[in-house]
Image 1 (cartoon, helix red, strand yellow):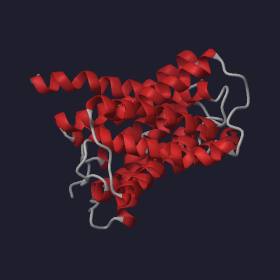
Image 2 (spheres, helix red, strand yellow; image 1 turned 90 degrees about the horizontal axis):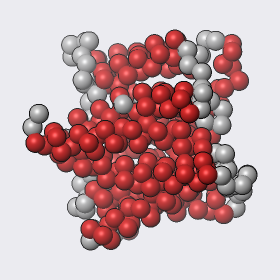
Image 3 (cartoon, one colour; image 1 turned 180 degrees about the vertical axis):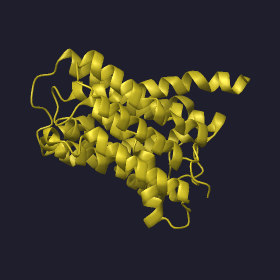
Image 4 (cartoon, helix red, strand yellow; image 1 turned 45 degrees about the vertical axis):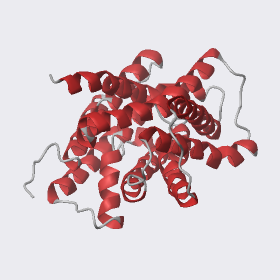
Length: 297
């Protein structure tokens, strides 16, 4: 193991655990907050965390309006909309399901690239991976099981959320990755923008529906400061140390962590079909990320 691999591995593991546990903390936040409240407060806490980090490290924020405009688009696609949709989804389905479906993000990215960003090529191996991914989704969600028909709103919300993630990746690569600011500065501006976008909805709705509890307070503090704050710093640090290809494999850790925590802390049920479906989704992610090649391009 090289010196660099030793330095990035703790942050990589911390990131996988943090993002994997986010689905549990969303459930805890929902004990007190509405889905809008969960999305807003995680953005607010995460933005403040990153802003304090930027002040401590003297990292300047973007200055041009057009730069903030692109960051606001990414904030909507990567934070505001998915933050709300995941919270909505978890009012209907388990955190285990949410963690498994979150792994469809690479699949959604390939679909977006295929139709909206033609300059980024998609090969036949990736297309087969997409097909395998949809088979995995069918098994995870129990699409052909009558017992799951009442949960369709949760599944739709989560898949729309990962579709937003899929758009954010190519958009960010095209318009944000070239901006000459530190990763922490871009993350702080992005996450703070997500809170600003959600502020009107939080003000003119009822973000709380019950009294605060220890679980809901802890859930939001951890979800905001770590899951939406420090997690971005760790992620960008991993990219700098070992590249985006290795850093993106954190996708394979998060559903495992989400499943373990959902079963242990929320006593959520788990079926064999979901295990098989989850493995197919992970295989799909590996194929569309070009880590597994079943088809020669």
